Image (cartoon, rainbow over all chains, first blue to last red):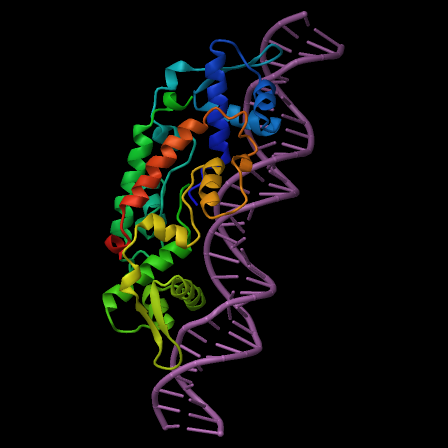
Amino acid sequence: MFKMPRKIEYALMSLQMLNQASLKRLTAKDIAEKLGIPLQVTAKTMQQLMNLGFVKSQEGAKGGYSLDYLNTDISLYDFLNKMQETPSIVKCQHSKIEMLHNETYGEENCEYFENCKIKNSMNLIQKKIEKVFKETKLTEII
Amino acid sequence: MFKMPRKIEYALMSLQMLNQASLKRLTAKDIAEKLGIPLQVTAKTMQQLMNLGFVKSQEGAKGGYSLDYLNTDISLYDFLNKMQETPSIVKCQHSKIEMLHNETYGEENCEYFENCKIKNSMNLIQKKIEKVFKETKLTEII
DNA sequence: AGAACTCGGATTAAAATAGTCCGAGTTTTT
DNA sequence: AAAAACTCGGACTATTTTAATCCGAGTTCT
């Protein structure tokens, strides 16, 4: 349990490679081959990173991706959020996070919410987990 | 991401209810109805908790379950392990944990292991997550 | 014009998770 | 002794989530 989605791993590994390449541009193919990740998957990942502003892209021949250093100085927590991933150990915690994103979830997101006697404890753990991700900087990883 | 399996939630909620019932025995049906969890699922959960020694069972009419206080004084981390759940944020971390259980996994459990440049950072985060679960006692939750 | 790229929607495959079914055994009650 | 009220546990099915692929289109360099 508690596995990160592969798309997050792919994103982090790709960002790391771009960071090491410094100003040099790398194509999705370059990255895919060096890491051993399927090209199509890498391409998709790069596009998402592009849309979120973590990398800059250059289309066409001689094109490729380079790191956008301006936007990498954030916490892993914020990075995950931007990648549409929210670390939430139980459903009722997830709904709280989603609400920040203006989704229409209530705490009743969990069908057991009313009779649940462990939610306070879960909330405590949730906070500690969040703390770990908030304390970790993206730049420490890549 | 990072959701706990429902079977863990069910187990914790059930243990909490048994704890509150103190010495009184509760049937799977009692627990299922009060919590709103399907009976079959609750029954399965209770059996697992029984096999692991967290609860004592009495078969037949007037039977049911009661908490085995002797075995509840452990960390949430150990509880999860016994329930066959290992909090591991990435595959290569998971393999390490599995090895403690004498499974035949290597670090190559992850196909990207060799070229992966983020595994050290992931390991650091993994350790912090583990710490949270090791510091939390089962008795604090139930 | 052609080669080498990125863009992004749509689809499909695979895996993990959750829930159900059902026959059997045990203990109390009538 | 039979019925009722339970637990036991294997096998199965459904659902959801996650991962991977397909493919037509647009951009830039040579």
